[in-house]
Amino acid sequence: MADHHFTETQIPQQRNYYNSVPFPSVLSLNPTTTVPCSASLLVETIKSKKPFLDSLLHKTGAVLFRGFDIKTAEDFNDVVEAFGYEDLPYVGGTAPRTNVVGRVYTTNETPPDKNIGFHHEMAQAPEYPSKLLFFCEVAPASGGETPIVLSHIVYERMRQKYPEFVEKLEKHGLIYSRLLREDDDTSSPIGRGWKSTFSTEDKAVAEERAAKLGIRLEWMEDGRVKRITGPVPAIRHDKSRQRKIWFTSMIGWEHAGNDPVNTITFGDGTPLPADICHDCLKFLEEECVAIPWLEGDVLLIDNFAVLHSRRPSKPPRRILASLCK
Image 1: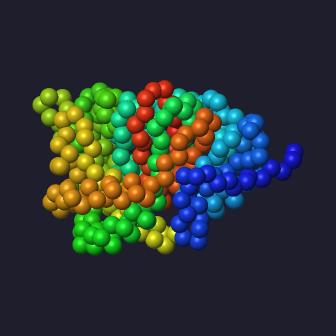
Image 2 (image 1 turned 45 degrees about the horizontal axis):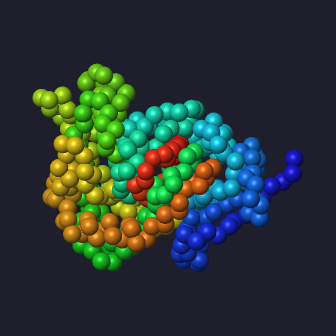
Image 3 (image 1 turned 180 degrees about the vertical axis):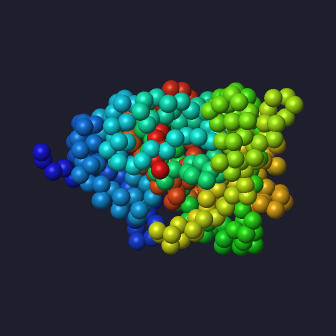
C-alpha cells in the first residue's frame, strides 16, 4: 500500500493568527487534480497520519478535509470511525436531531432559513464533546455556512473592552433556564422537547436523568417544564494550550414561550447587560471564518477551542454530524 500524505492547501476565507497559523487548516491529498480522492483512501490516510492530525488540530483548532469523494452517511461514518475517537451519545442536548447511521446524526433540524448563534456543543452539560465532525452531503446553493471562531480570541477581545463584566462572568458563571414542551418543536434551534431530551416519557425518570446532568426541572400546569442549568462556568481554562476561552453561548435564544432576557442570567441571578451581549455578537461575527460548503467536505473541530454557528440558507442543505468524547 502506497504511503499517502496530506497536503495543506490555502483557500481565500482562511485567517492567519499568531505565527501565521492558518485557521482553519485545509487538507487534501491531490490538490493539483480536480478528481476527488476516494473515501477509502481518506480513511486509510487518517489512520496512518493520526499523530500528525492530532497535533495539527491542537495547533489550529479546526481542520477542513476537501476534495474527497464522500457521498453518503455510511462513507462519513467510516471517516468518523477512522479517527478512533470515542463516541458521545447526545443526551441532554437541546437541538432536535436524528440518528442516521452508526455514529452519524442530522445536525440541528430547525428550518434552514433560521440563523443558529455561536456556541460550543453542549457547553452547559457536565460532559460535552471534545471533537465534532461535520460532513456536507448536500451543499446549499448559497448561504448555509457553518462559521467558526477561536474561543480564546473572543475572550481576549471581551476582556480588553469589558474587564469588569468578564471578571463577574468568571466569578459567577451563568444560569440557563428554558421552557421545554413535551414534544419536539422543530421550528426552534433549541426546540427539543423534554421526552426526547431525556429519552423517556416518565417525569420521574426525566428528573433523575436531568439531575445527573446538573439540571433542575420545574413542571408547569400546561405540560411544559422549566429546565434550569447552572451556575455553569462561562470562562474556562484550556490547560493543553495554556489560555482562557469563552465557553458560552451567552446570547438569549429566541424560542417559543421563552423570554430571551431571562433565559440566561449571571450565576447570582442578575440580568446580563444587553449592550455588552450585543457587542459580543459583533466580535464573534468580526473574528469568525465562514467557508461555503462543498459536497464531500468534512470539517473536524476541537470543541474546546472553537465556537460554531449556522447561517441561514434556502433548502436543500444537508450537513451531518458526529460528536466524540
